[in-house]
Image (cartoon, rainbow, N blue to C red):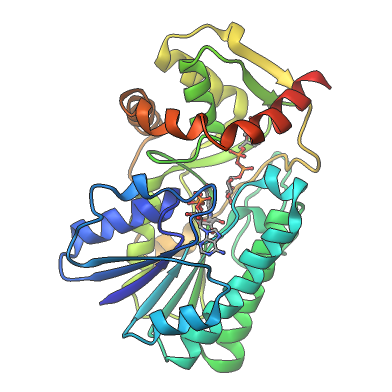
Length: 338
Ligand code: NAD
Ligand code: DAU
């Protein structure tokens, strides 16, 4: 099978490529990535010379380039490429619409033109919006996105759905909860807090820190996508979650405990606008229909993750000393002072 992975130089995409090449030595992977601030070829340095792996630097919005790649025998598209960080979508929504919505439409059009066998849209639990203390979203729950990021992902999901309904494009949408693990860009909660603690920098908790997310180890997400890729169903939506809801303060405590650092590093800062209080997915559909469930208990996953960042300081120090500093200054120093 020849798979086009978009956004394969990012966090989940790079973990997925490594997972697939190891598990299926005969599969071919083509990675199309624009290498934005979040795309990093260091994430794939161990497989860059693999004979079944090919990298193209380019934009998913470039129809001509996408057609050239898809037209060269691609069987399936696993579409990760996106602007993925909620805070950045508040500063600059336009690029989220461009990449996440228009870029997805370019890929759908090309998938249709070359009659590919499967299109997997990697989406998020954020499209369902914020939940109260109880209850979980099912695949048919209303879409109520609150940030420009989640609105752009929900819009892309609707386009994918329309290409299935109108043109019978064999598409599937997966909606996953918060991933954590190796190679996650250190602007997201877990890698930011691990690396800040290692640098003796403060851990900026937005608001009261009682916001709840469900955390899944990235390899479990990759296994779920492998399952979805290899089943016959099309036109379906599958929720994917880690069965592990925690407040941000609980996550912070666990990280500090793993690293043996003091709670005095914690600093409450200005809240994120329209900060969703809680996400929670009911994942019984993927369990019942495809037999998938998450394998990694959170205590094991977070310990592996902390150890990975401890033993890969070169990887994140390179990121944290570059362009990243401009974002950090703009975002955090401003937040801390208000
Ligand atoms: P990431 O930000 O780490 O990686 C995104 C990748 O996409 C980067 O390599 C970037 O260079 C590339 N990219 C961005 N714009 C592009 C464009 N126009 N053309 C080509 N490449 C482009 O993101 P991630 O955390 O790995 O998330 C991957 C996907 O999974 C996203 O679609 C995201 O919405 C979804 N998702 C993420 C999570 C999570 O917890 N991280 C949870 C659920 C769903
Ligand atoms: O739920 C899935 C989504 O998870 C994905 O679709 C997104 O791509 C991914 O970025 C992630 O979004 P979140 O907004 O949940 O992740 P983030 O790591 O930015 O924040 C997690 C929680 O931690 C959230 O409640 C905000 C809070 N937070 C975050 C940062 C970066 C802080 O309190 N302080 C911080 O510095």
